Every structure is written in C-alpha cells, then in structure tokens.
Image 1 (tube, rainbow, N blue to C red):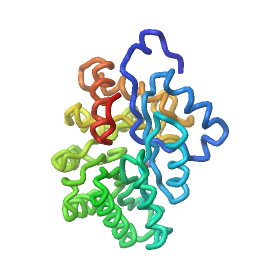
Image 2: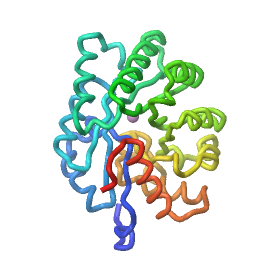
Image 3: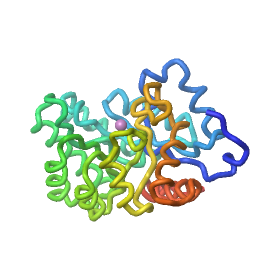
Length: 268
Ligand code: NI
C-alpha cells in the first residue's frame, strides 16, 4: 500500500494481534517487518498460538524493538499441553517484552480437542495471567456462554485484557466491556455480512476498541483473499471512523493510546 506524505504525519497504528511467526511470512518476514516503522505501523504484538509459535514469538520480540509478544496456547492447540511443557509457557511469559498471556480461550467450532480439555487449559492460563499480573488475550468462537461463565468464575475483571476478533452480539459485548475488557477489531468489520460487528462497534466506546489484523488471516476489503498484514489496518480505521462519525486520525490516536494501556507499554 502507498502512503501520501500527509498520512505519514498521522498517529501510527498499533497492531494488537498478529501472527508473524506463521509460515505465510517465511519468504519475506524480515523485509516486511523492517518496513513497518516507515509505513505508519508503530507497534505490533505478535501472539503465540502453539508451543512452537510461542518460541518463535520470543525470537521475534528479541529481534524487533517495536514488536512485543503475547504467550499462550490457543484452545485448538491445547491437546499438546502437559504439566512439563506448561512450565515452558510460564518461563516465556516472564520474558521482559511479553505483555500478555494469549491467545487463550474456547473454540467450539472445532470438535477437537474436547471441551473439557479446552476449559481446563483456559482456566490454567487465566490463572497464570493473574499470577504474573498480565492481561489475557482471549479467543472465543461459538462458545460465548462457557467463555463468560469461566471468566466470571475466575474473576477475569481483576485480570483484564482483550476479546480478540470479537464475533458475538452487542449483548455479549456489553458483558465483556463491563468486565473491563477491550474488543479487538480487524478486517471482518469491512465484510458485507458483518452486521453484528457493525452494531458492536457503533455501541462500544472508542476508548475500549483496539486494532488488530490476526494476520495472515482475515484480510480486510479490498484486499480480501490475499495474505493479511498490518499495512491493511488503515481500511479498518476508515470503517470505524465512518461508523462513529469521527476522523480517521481520531480513531488512530485513541486506539494507539488504548493499546498501550491494554498492554501496559509506555507510550514513547
Ligand atoms: Ni490470532
């Protein structure tokens, strides 16, 4: 994407949820990441999903000043967890640039691993977040009730964090907002069938929204179908600005502040 001079003057973007460890970036990872600071992408949180991706996330946060890490095991990967390798997750979480535990949660779109396994490791990782004083990055798909129930039981309002790629109704958004959580908004907002998400973005206060790609997935229109990366976030900014009736710069400025608050990163 090309940027005009005026755009470079704008507040940079914080991509709060990316997967640059993914093999989709094997060919050009360093060239792409190195291009971000000059192209309006100020900071990125790379989010672990499996043990291997957590290990890769640690390397990325060592290699790039502007890149932070979230360490955790995604619900669909929890079958690989046991007490021994869970201690590795805990060690990685103690890295100085690890700013959150995630992504963790429940995903009932898939039958495997079973719900009891997913729930067990969701709770263990929420407890880890509490112990370490880190926010949680939550992945919840087709599992709204159990997610809310477990978060309520575990007093997630004392842990805080973000509901990444929020995909439920306004009523459910209200429950998460009442618990003090942020909502992660990405490319899905630009899709034609995004009615529920449009309603949620209209409803939610701007100071509780953060921008994300979930790249390489969920590329916004007009690039849908291609590999996603942080350079596409301006399309999401544009859509939020339209829905809220404010300028794109205001969306950038407020979400930049929100992301720093979410991950307890100093703004400079
Ligand atoms: Ni993700």
